[in-house]
Image 1 (cartoon, rainbow, N blue to C red):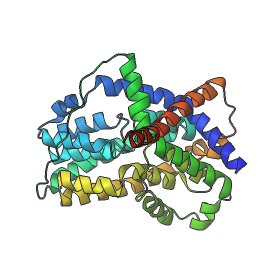
Image 2 (image 1 turned 90 degrees about the vertical axis):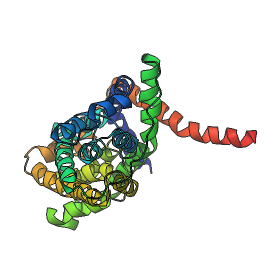
Image 3 (image 1 turned 30 degrees about the vertical axis):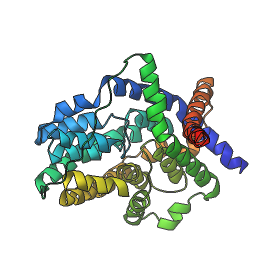
Image 4 (image 1 turned 135 degrees about the horizontal axis):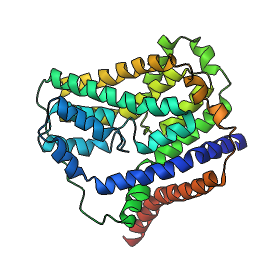
Length: 335
């Protein structure tokens, strides 16, 4: 238990400065780029231009597969075509400013560059395929724009460390816990021996592992890194990084409602095949494995900046996790 706790704290501290900065940038985006602006930019666009704009907006947005659903619903409400809607749904959950920085901190530059590139490519392909498939019209789900408010520092911090961090605090903590458990309890080269170096088996298995999990793009990072340290190839881990955040049961049912059943199948196939193809490419990059080893990163010395960031981030995560429970007890006591 002690070793698991040590591994948890070390990985958390390694990621903390990048997460603090990433969520700050995310808060600025959330305050200065409102949802109704996104709707106006892509409303009524169903061609390649709308798809490209959807991907350009979706890739940097630090929003999970559930958070992007009301935005996509808003696009459909304002007349966006199925192509741009699908492009946003495919590209947004896979990555964001916060997860790109955290990926660089824990898994190196190869993965940090590959994640947004893969999200953009699969978003474009998914948008084009869904637009081409067409099919039956789906029911448009209404979504309300975020209320207008202050654009000052207080609003940015609220968006960054209350709303955005609060939305991923629980899955992030769970992801770190899984990473620590895998790091300590799973023997070295366990997955390498289990798959016998055969990525034709490993990659589909990683896709199946990621499919039922609800894990955001940031929370998936320590899990993927720990899998690599235990013998999973970088390509197979990359499959998990793409599939885990992009697909879950709730997102599939909502996507079907937004773009139709046939288009939803195209959306699913695009992500799965795109993840495996990207995994194959990652394995062709010589430095991917060495840059991604969690075992190497956990030996790095931690600076005061790491520890200060970790304390701040832990305090904000604890606040976001405890506050709903406290408010629930307060409501019960007033009845």
